[in-house]
Amino acid sequence: MSKPNFRCKNATELLRYADQIFQKLIENEDIFVDPVPSLEAFETSLRKYRKAFVEASFRDQRAVILKGQAGKELQEVIYRLSHYVDAIALGDPAIIVAAGFRPSESNTARYDRTPKAENLRVSHIQVGSGIVRIQVKPWTPARLYRYEYRKKGTDAWASILHSKSTIEMRDLDKLQEYEFRASYIGRDIEPNYSDVIAALVV
Image (cartoon, rainbow, N blue to C red):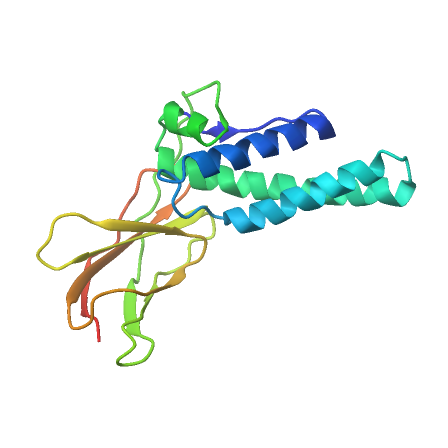
């Protein structure tokens, strides 16, 4: 398996690499539809670091400290994005590169199988709203949660990646019966889906 990684030796390299990833995610938004964290959050962190980088060039001690803090925040955002890209790419280095990341040099690592998602529940937020809440038992090592749904009787599943074990789904057709399933995304990114649950959207 190849997976995204980043190793920035200095502040200039981090800024350049973050810019590259941001631009690639925009250019390939058809592949990376709903990034986690969002592009808005990424852009905010990137702008904050760029400003801190400029201000620290004057060697003011406080500015240097703030630059370091902003840099750690930006690296955390990139790290979380790498999990999202990893889940989308499923080991395909071409998709990893399309996101601006570097594929890992080794593809020989083997990880324990992700456990089957448990205790999937579907509930309605409010009758008439057409909004349903999907919940699955949390799994601490999960990088992301993959939720899938389809109209009952159809074959293709629609997929949503989310950072939490609960998600609200909107824009579903009312008075239609849907099927739902979920999977944890861990170090082994191969999905291991829950049992399928059917529910009428009202």
